[in-house]
Length: 390
Image (cartoon, rainbow, N blue to C red):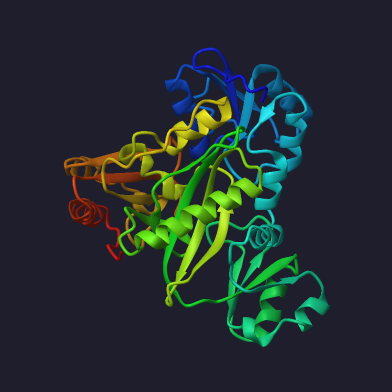
């Protein structure tokens, strides 16, 4: 950017991608008076439904990109698999954050891990599989491990656990022998994530550390403050996240996921160049949300240090809740009973149909104390038929 901020009410902000993260970015931008434009190939999308304009086009469509650039003063992305080339193309005409180069690193696990190491942040021991020679050279110390496709994997997709060299070879065949990363399986105690925000001037702030629970590779529960992480460990995670963002010359909201091992060591897992599911709690528990900060970073506005004003538990709501257990019969969750509980904040994403495993919304539970938030969250989970296993 030129250094001159895009002031509220005076500019148009664009977003590549029409999913729920784009929707919440658009809503945050509109609350500050910005005009918004979404580019997404689907005729119906959560973000496109609420934006001032929806450009229906492929992410690499030249005419669509030209329309977006012509209408917007600055442009961001709402998910990491938007082609980096499209962001670079837009950057020839408009300010784009995060930059295509930063997104490209996040799109490839091999590049991502190399960047972690270059930043001085420890990650799990790993090996790259690109050819038969790589398979033959895998050290036995990496087994048992998790084989992950280098590109396009998310929410547990493109990942297979392997215990032996034979299982590794079979798993690579199942993944069509695309470039992969084999990570050593580590003894985990818990999972944390950090939302770090950086602007073009190099100012960096971060949100409170989140403690996360995943089920079947999909985030299920987030707790803030992180109940099992010491203050020193949380500070280490925030400093590591800031270092990774700075070394990427990142602008925008970046989520860094960490593993805490049973011996207390902290290792970085992966990063997402966008707001993150684990940061949805910020919409009701902080004085600014992750989407507010995405808007501020893109527009070149000041970045205040976010403050947590309420302990919170976030429950991810998947499409399974819209079906009877073990049946294809559809139902409507009992939102009236859930919303009768104190401190509950329901966010549905405007998706037209539910599917098992599809992210349909989230429920934030805030309270005066962490214990009170947890107690209400367990009540809400019981009403929804969710396990209370955190």
